[in-house]
Image (tube, rainbow, N blue to C red; front, side, top):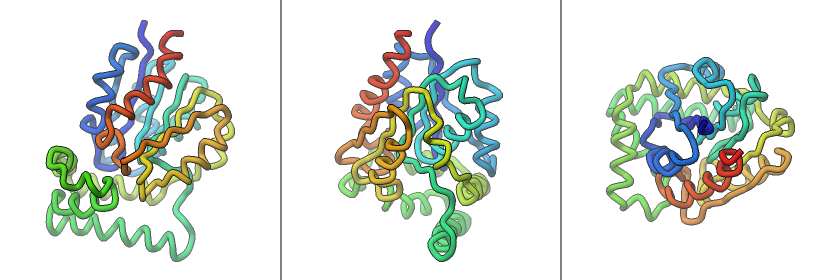
Length: 240
């Protein structure tokens, strides 16, 4: 029987972000892609995954999906046989002015999505998310914008609330005991390599992979490199 692999997308994302990985890892695993939907808490997203998951499974989360994956591990660590945390983080909302600034920025984008539409908001959002030279890559840009435009402002608002109220996960990291890959784009401005170095240092026996020429949307920006890293992480588990 193949290993079960659950892939968890991030904010406003879906199976599109995992297209290359789900295809190229299909020989190693039975791949399922989680649906976060309009749930407005990371805990609710995690509990929905747990309710539908097989008894034991590998788990990879990108961006917000990485935080959801950590909430899954917090609740059912004995069921997660391998973990990949990608372009993500572990801190809660900062206190004081830095946190207020983050909330204001996130809510301004939500309001823009209501006023001007999801695609217009998506173009502004992408400016800090994608490796700068790739913003002229029409295929990549349109794939991301089409994905965002398929969502609603209400769903965006709900997922934004989930991120603003994100739980602290730093204390969980040293307790993780399964094989863990920590991966990010070298030019990820939102979830920078330094944060992933911190996470990898806290997770016993974890592997850190920093993907060059890559921003936050690593699975789409550098799909081959990301799939290769995931294969290296998953293959020993799949072989049993």
